[in-house]
Length: 483
Ligand code: GLN
Image (tube, rainbow, N blue to C red; front, side):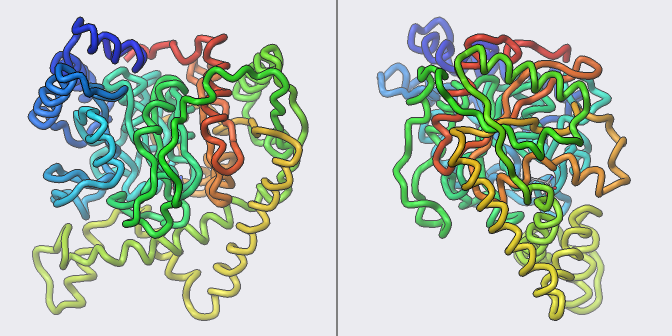
């Protein structure tokens, strides 16, 4: 039943042909069968899931269930979950049991979704391959020698492997869209400020945004509708009401103007990705959309700007992990300073340390103007490029990742190659725009290719509608991996 759409599962729950407890049991059994191979979950909360499922069944019986009531789901381990281990993929938090729920967790609980566990991720959401986790790499269900993408690789792999129908993720520079593409599922990162960051462990606060993974755009729409709305506990949460993101699903594509950034198509994309992307665009034209060339002249500067801004914010955000208030503390140390140093040296992995060093450097006296201020100016130029492009088109389309999933270990010793995996996704975060990735075919080695759709601010309902129409006439999203 977990393979079905959320609508089908909800109908079955109402018709009593399946119960929430049975669904949770099915999900837990699949995790038990597959997790030793895939390593998608850091924590499985069997008792919590069954208790939540019983509550969902009671609610269904009482007739006050919503579209997510009784649906098994997983949270990326960046979201704080009351009474449940919340590690952020780090040794630093490997013993941290959160005393409270993230806003997103509260909302999905209130909707009756049943959390079965917490998914693996790159440490502090820093990575593009899920190889930076303290809990070991996640494996791609399409080929277990390959990465699932990162940093939300556990959530993407869990949905692709049919362990859960939906999962949360976060996207600071591509961490929802890139793993969705590499695992052959659908993922959406909404406009910055739409999903509350309260209880979402901070990496780069001006870029971090929660979002949804599912197999289809329709399921993403149902899930996202339960995750948004103003939260006064997040100072950048937008004062907007919750929205119904399913509202544009039925909208036909006739006349839709799809902008194709010449810079995205110029070079960098591998031939197999290009072929799948071109075929998907041909399908969109068949459905009535028209494509227009647009330009994002500063997009090539997105990676350098991001790798100044994100580490700068990370170096500040991660200063709270000092071994005093929570998290790892060195067993042996001299004075207080030594305790900080040893705890942080032991608790953080290599990539996190690299980011803290870069961030501290670019924020230091003398370098602040040379790097940090310059990156902020580039960020503005990139946002202006998108604004100009959206005068000519309704949505922007292109590749999500330059290649299909790469091999585990293939890029882990070359940070710059790894950073380049996000070349098509990062500009979207710098501008704060919504972005979606959906399955668009297969490339080398039979691995999935994802098409990226970028919307204007608050254009997520339309993005989901566009992807839904594509999924009505294609079946890439329905293909199942071997594992
Ligand atoms: N790969 C990018 C990074 O390492 C983006 C990560 C993310 O979106 N969380 O920073």
